[in-house]
Image (cartoon, rainbow, N blue to C red):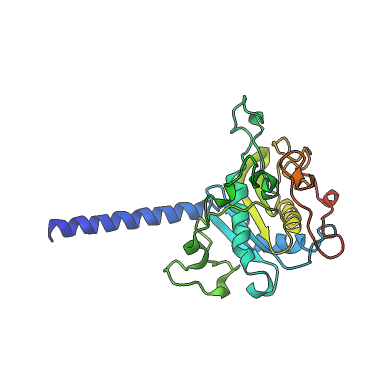
Length: 276
């Protein structure tokens, strides 16, 4: 074998080894997070609860690990056609955003504005900050979704839509990316305020998406946020949606618009459980 052929083969083996190791690491990053069946059950239980309001539609939900790996994608309807199809990727965007912009206890410096409490930011908290003139304007254009991860099987062929929302959804095991700046994404926190990933929900109004995500997180027992910093001004619900927009302006910069729906579309926040 010529030396150039040996070098080519060696390079291919190294690339294959690196890809296998990355896939192994991404698989392991989901080990202690909710399974597909647990996510689906939590979504079903959270949807339709009095106080969510909205349009009463079926939902998509995505769990993402700390490193951005998609761990599970599920829906509440009969099949993938029972929910807004666009909401599949939107739910993953929301999870990616909440995970990527939230911090757990003990990782922030003691001299920071939040001290060592960390900072939980829901996607609902970002709406006003990304508007023109806002402190985070342009954030929504960063970290675009990887379309290959969203819509292709591992062999590079277009995914079978029948796999969407199933245990073999093509997003599972990949880093999807994406930034979303309206309600439905929440970071997941284990005991002692340690961030372990995030959940994203989509399929109804953004206000209702937030409500369903909140209830699902609580059901999954991953809302240990007591003492974690937030922007809602409510220590019992630090990353809750804030309705303080008057005349198009949020009173303290983290507000989210009210939503339309059947009757009064705005959800009843007092029906949400406090964090643990």
